[in-house]
Image (cartoon, rainbow, N blue to C red; front, side, top):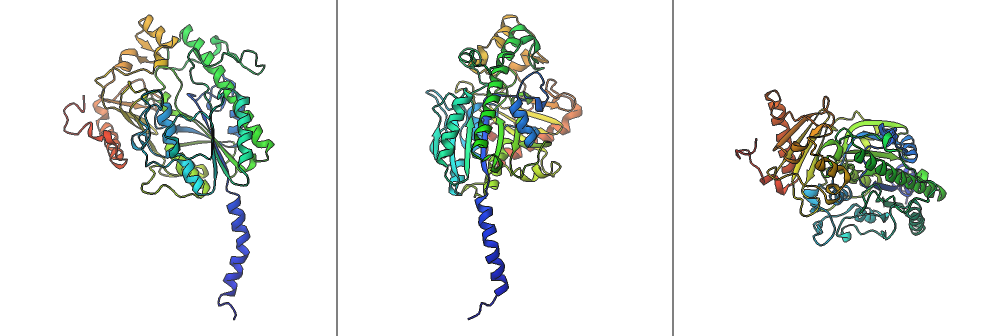
Length: 466
């Protein structure tokens, strides 16, 4: 008996090898996460620091100039990146550490679980700092490693690649640098390393939100040294991928979990806390491109799923969207706002905030502003902050110390005129309409994401506008 549709069958038979090849060629994905790095690399304009490997990665691919984390705190940020849910959604409200460790909801599906279901081999090397790990289901966890050592991390990468077989893989590569250590920035122990780079405090760039003092410059020099060592670790990883013949089949992303570990950046919703690097290189990614679209780390999880052809989580929808359209064309419509969410850093540091950043403005809602703004313990003890306290400084760079510690209910900044967010224009009558619009958009976003903190304030609350 002859088939009824011979031409259709012939076409399908001819397409099967191509379809199988396409499935087999799904890209490997490597997500590199720096710990507390700001926009400190040459590709983002800082010529005082040496980051040759990150700059080479940017040349191989696309680096975003308006990429934002959702929260400027380690565990909550990593949880948002790895689940595609804001911290107030996934339950990782603060740091996953010590006796009072905070944990995600049991129903949350991490990206590795979703990619495993699509046939990916998944792994984590170095720092992760999110719990419970069962929500992620990594096939291989290599977290007992000196995550400040470029070579130790690279050796674990080789071990991981030996386990992947013929499967496409998803690897999270978590450095500890340039996070603060108990003393300094973890540079002790690397003095004899011939590749270690030390910096002259006189030649570093002091960010505009910090005072230009000797104590600050010394700390920035130590931070630069730690960041450059992390950059060397990126180079080692790229060498491992090249040696294995996998570099051309692997999409490599580089991000940081939050802004630099200095007052005015980490744990805040200011630009220095949330405005961070995002570099993507690999098959199908435009090369040597600077992309100016406004994007969020909340969009990374949908992008991973898109690249892998994997299904999203059952039972709920991710609020982000795949970056693939905007990678192809930075002028794609709909990329004009990003939201931020913060509850805790350490368990004693409750200070809930919500924010909205557009191409021109930033709005911050401080939901419990009667409190003094709390400091992470390592930032409080830092020579930088102690120099502010001990010298009774009125100004911390371009921001008054008093207004940093005692914040108003609402903050509004014109980023076109005030890119670092120093002058709060929320009380200016000329901005009343803009303020109302941004306030409403934040409220709508809170409702859409089922934010438990949306009940903290109401429109009829007389304290709302104070």
